[in-house]
Image (cartoon, rainbow, N blue to C red; front, side, top):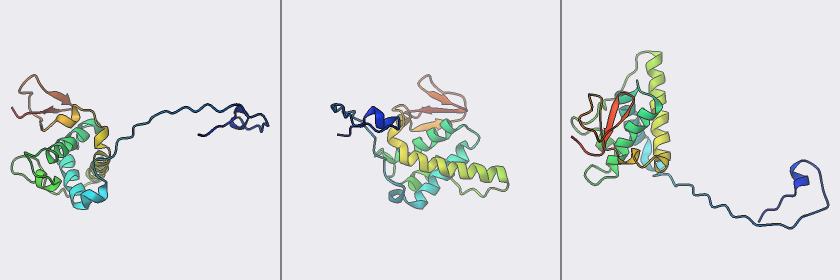
Length: 159
């Protein structure tokens, strides 16, 4: 137990030490899904490429939701267990490796990389709704059971 007297807290030394009351405050800090080292640079780059190619014109929430779709699929036994394998599936994501030609696009790619790392390290902290998304599209919503973030519509099941 750690006891700090009020006098010490405000910068005065005191010889009076009040009785210490132990207060326990449980803090649940969720563990990351895996560390970046566990995923590896290639997996981070594959996730970065999907974020960049699919949602670089979206806000941060939309880009993280796109990244979550990939991770949600990796964690679902219906899809491959590697990020690159999921992102390279035919007709699923625009996952080609970007070669940005101008400063704004290079900045968008750097942002996508930061968000890929952030999402991998903080996946367990995402809302349960975001962790349920397995699909998204940017067309018109096809049913009522969707969540719209920016221009993208996210859902648990493909319709």
